[in-house]
Amino acid sequence: MNTTAVRLYGKNDLRLETFKLPPIGDDEILARVVSDSVCMSSHKAAELGAEHKRVPDDVAVNPVIIGHEFCGELVEVGKKWAHQFKVGQKFSIQPALNYKGSLDAPGYSFPYIGGDATYIIIPSVVMEQNCLLPYDSDAYFYGSLAEPMSCIVGGFHANYHTKAGSYVHEMGIKAGGSCAILAGAGPMGLGAVDYAVHCDRKPALLVVTDIDDGRLVRAASIVSVEEAAKNGVKLVYLNTASSADPTQALLALTGGVGFDDVFVYAPVKPVVEQADKILGNDGCLNFFAGPTNPAFSAEFNFYNVHYASTHVVGTSGGNTDDMIESLKLMECGKINPAAMITHVGGLNAVIDTVLNLPQIPGGKKLIYNHKDLPLTAIADFAALGKTSQDETSSFFKALDEIVSRNNGLWCAEAEAYLLENAPPIA
Image (tube, rainbow, N blue to C red; front, side, top):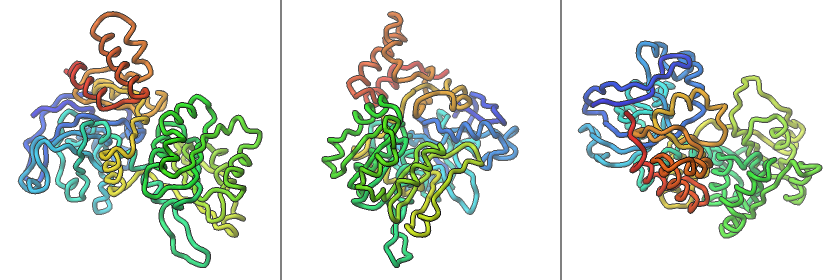
């Protein structure tokens, strides 16, 4: 069978190619990939080429398929796995295989499996590590968001607290406590707000900050104060740029005692230092946003570390359990991470998107692998639908009408329309 895929050959050397896949072995699975969400990690892999820790040294002669946030359906199942997986079953993948100390991962290290391909061969190691995850939903894009959502879930699980006189770490945010998400009105921050409001271990107070009123208003329309209250959470959206003393404004919301959990969703020195200043006794600062500068640092109050037991954690990605939890929450409709998606495109748009990702504003860029479609911001659908009377204009007009009925968010109906009407990849 032929596949069309974006392959990495070296530094900034990505190529869209059609080539033949070998027949699958008894311990392999052939799959059709429908959607992939582009991650900054793919940009870093393209930027570094063989110097990336997950990319093979011989990538120039044995290229790998990029993309690791993907969802699709199984086409052919080798007999070793026929008791566990079925043809036609939807799936998502946990790319962090953690196999015998190896850093190899789909989307970085393998010639026949990656998210930016029409068809792939899933090697036995993925199933052996329980990283092929069944997924039961009408929409494929949620399966592509399971990996970034699992990073959020993992962050909440990584926080910890202790009791006076005890050295036992109680994992997770403090149930019924106070939680702040700083710089939290962006796409990933909205996923965190959604999870905090709807997960099993909720804070009583959740404060979300940003420095842009427009983003905060948009955030409040997606996860509303009223929705949070229904779930037992007092949700406050706060513009720290409009306060003369934002640190004191934040502390006042806790009665002056400080927060139990503070998440930093932007790798900005003043934000990290503000997070430190608003920690309460036994407060946990989660540095969620990954910096690109390896020398990134910020001041931290070690007096409070010693006398108030404040502490820091950081996570980079989620584990398989986090992905399973994310998938289940999406399947039952408890969370809706669609707010992460700001652009959609076809497989033809992957190379430019990956190479230029830091310069493209917005959140997640969702790719539909079997389609030929320029990367397009959801916010631009309306304007594109008015440009002319041709098929392209009608296509975007219809998409705009669909997402407008869904509070401007990508949704299952929009995906179904795109899959039915967007032109196929050549």
